[in-house]
Image: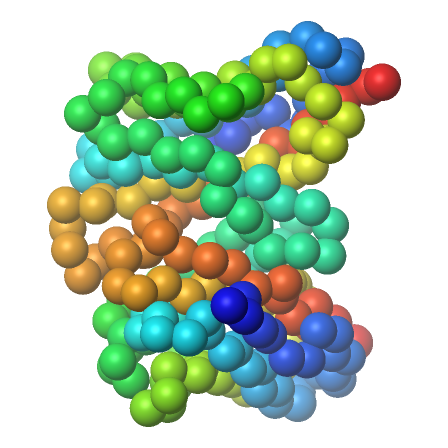
Length: 115
Length: 112
């Protein structure tokens, strides 16, 4: 039972354009969402997060949007750069359930930025 | 400040054997979580240890076990290895909250 879904295994975007990565979740207990970026042979690194009390969080070129009613979030990267080529994982957890905060990850989207 | 260190980086084992993976968290971090990454499955949560106690557990069979020492270092053991256990095993540490976790580079286990 995949509670966090990333339905696009891969995405190719021209350098300088906008990259949009999508994520859907099914568990209503999730109230905190994170995006991680992973290069080959490295562990995931935290990129940006959003609490369920917000619908948008921005950090430089990265913006995460949350639509709670649709149980959907998206990561926008603009402008896309070659160094953004990586696998992106969406993750969710029940932050309010202190002590039971295991991260649930999606299957990842491989983003390729074309120069 | 040193990051999360996992050893070994690569491992090849034979079906039926057992294996122990090690994780040294960031200094001061008391929570250590383990994840299995396989193609098409993303990262799946194995278990979390906090102050030497297992605090959370995922849906893996009993062949997967772990422990945490008083210095917060953690080990993960897999007994009676199966071909399907071939994966990247990632360890993450945090002071306390999962949302603040930092990941190690992982141990690539290949079962032949």
